[in-house]
Length: 345
Image (cartoon, rainbow, N blue to C red; front, side, top):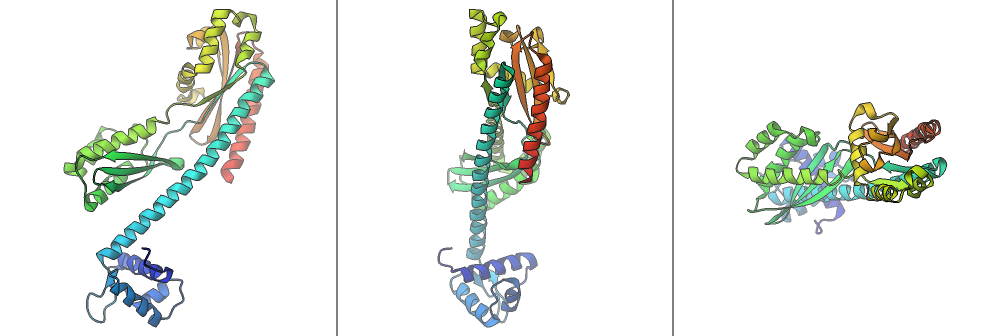
């Protein structure tokens, strides 16, 4: 690729793309209309002659146009992969920037709620179904593949897959087609036994590799299943006598800091569409043992359709419910405005 100057690159690309579309040898007159170079047919013929000498194209018979050689096809595929990798990297940089902004916003929300209510607050990162958008398998060496998994909302995961036997490029191409044909648009719950069986039938003797790739997809998806929870005002709990007993307070503070039990509570509620409004859990209604003397009020924020997170306020059972509910309702409207504005930009 490095040996080709910009003009030759564009002409070669035009030849390959035109030949892929028509299956007919490509002449200089066609290229003069196909590119934005504004070159004469004579100049294009000279460049095509150079490309032929370099082995990228050839003339099937006298007076015919040119068709791509194996070297030309290799150039085209490598260029596509290079462009795809750049797109993925650019996408990842944008996502990292957005994630940082969202993290800061959620932390600020938790702090403001704690200061405004004088209770303990928590807020989760958004959760959503992860649908497969695109899968690209690329050979690293004889023993390893790079699997680039792109999910909806441009979540990108890179995984290394170890091979027991090397794969030729034809088999790798076939596996890419099989994976994308069967998995595009599916979320984890839709990748069921019938889908997997059909994929393995298509893969034939390489079904073990398909199995490894499916395991990799499951692993990549499940890595993000842990909800991140930000808390604030944890020591506000100690302001209320009924919660300030040393042992109870210690257990409650541990729950708030360790967060695993909070995750179970939030996940259980967010998966049920009936629990997407404001919910109030008093005493024994709360499944977390250390919070039986507390009340928990939660609300759902929505970044976009199908992408939800939870905000929660934890206090004594005698908390000011009217104030807490009103505060959460106002917050939900403010977050809705923020996310709608961000989604437009």
